[in-house]
Image (tube, rainbow, N blue to C red; front, top):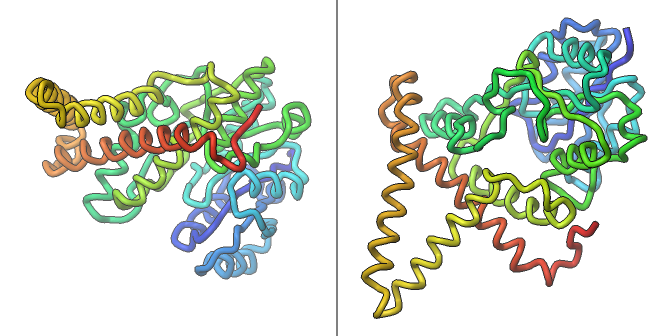
Length: 339
């Protein structure tokens, strides 16, 4: 069997890193034909020790731990690619768990030549056992939260814009280059845009499945989506044609709230601004609550009727705020993303 290199960026992932490694060790693909390369960005917790202990207790699985001095994800991926030897390269995250046949299915699709990048669907799980974490996981998988990001919920194999945790033939990185280290976030989407721009294809197969642990608090969720929005604007400088409706709505929704709020201070517009602002907010949360009924009923947790809409709102508003802040600060950026 061809050697497969699994590359993983990690930083302070002590709670999930062994879950990932155990899932890799349990793959249906021959363990002798796997290597795992973890690029650590200077973890301050027990991540490195747990990786080392796991490697010692699982000598059949080749595990290599390397340093990522830049401490950003694309740099970690590039370091790991350079250190890898496999004919096929699969990217995973330290807070993910691939299904047992994940590697086998990825390799089969790549051998069939169906696309330059192959990926699957996330099963999103809560970051901990709290009800709020469950609500955030539901929001992160809900079409109202992620729009047409099909890797979050699709059940149909198809060509798409992007996939998480891509699988590639090694020569893809020779043809299209490595991950862009000027984009600390959105590096996957940018790489896939580059592939598609040069005639390549991205294939989503829902039979390829992995578990992804969502953030466990609204604060962590807000920081995550603020980063997504901020760096999405920088990426759009290069690939404006990649903007999708799901990405455009949050900035414009936030802008509308801001404009109505400004209008409230104008005496001649105060009444209508208050009325229209109120209607917009009521309609927005009404739609989100209506869309959360199914989730609350399935999980038999009525509180999700409120917590899921709030979590989706946190995603939308944080993404929009990051986007607008990126636009406002772009002229003053020391390292703006340039073509």
